[in-house]
Image: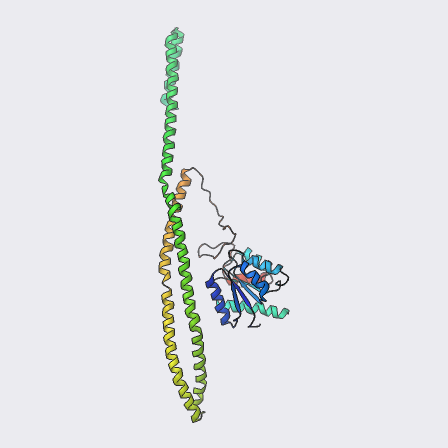
Amino acid sequence: MNKDMKILIVDDFSTMRRIIKNLLRDLGFNNTSEADDGQTALPMLQSGNFDFLVTDWNMPGMTGIDLLKTVRADEKLATLPVLLVTAEQKREQIVEAAQAGVNGYIVKPFTAEVLKEKIGKIFERVDAAS
Amino acid sequence: MDENLSEDYLNKARSIITEVEAGNIEAADKLVEELSRSRDQSLFQELGKLTREFHEALNGFKIDSKLTTLTGTDIPDARERLKHVIDMTDKAAHKTMTVVEDLMPLCETLGSQSGDIQERWKRFMKRDMDTKESRALCDEIGVYLTEQNSGTDRVRHGLNDILLAQDYQDITGQIISRVITLVTDLETSLVKLIRESGAILEESNQASTKDGLDGPQVPGLESSDAVSGQDEVDDLLSSLGF
């Protein structure tokens, strides 16, 4: 796992973006950017060479699940690892995210350990596949 | 039609027959007229009763002017109050994080300095150090203690700021309690209105929001098809081959 990888954090609440940013920095990831919904995130992803996307689900504008689907449908972004960090915990939603091709799913509120574990797992697989 | 009225009808009808049989057509005519008048009278009475009920129902709606106040003033007011709650919690969270982000590097610096000194201190205690290095270590310890001192001051200050940033809870708690009271009042008024307008209250279990997302689960109000925490999410995902 490359600690210099470029990460985009998408959440409509600035406090949550800041928490995730700090937790990622604590894990050694310093190269982070922020967006407040899918609509803002998409052009950043398309032009920014990001290595990892961490997104909330419930946002105005474009939701996280729509962002995930758009990313998977975009030829250039299709393989981008995506972690959903959300308060949504209905079974059908988790299944929907899985079917849309999410790489990890964290429910809020979450701990630093859970974030670390999920990121570790995601890149174990990504690294094994490449 | 009440009993008195039907008895009255019956009596009058019998009298009419008696008069007709006796050949008193004029008297019979008079009785027929009386009979039709009493029928009109009962119609008027019914109409009067209906009018009174209608009037009372209208007054009932007027009593519910409480609803007008609730929707016209109290709800927009509550909206502003709740926005204020978001603002206050937002500010408190950022204030806390600013202090944490500010103090984290300080702790890291002090930690690595003390770790560095500790290594050499162990050697010094084992007399595994020449005089020149011991002197340098003493100087460094002096500098470190000064930094540690001012650093501890900054940490204490920061912790105090974090403590004070929690004062939002009192105020947001009060605001939210008032909004809960308002929602309860509104519910009572609406239920009354529905009852008065004669609609039937149907039990409904549909609780989905307009965008189909449930949002955070609330203790005691968990959705039956929601998982309860990260472990169940992981179980569900692994059952899907994750």
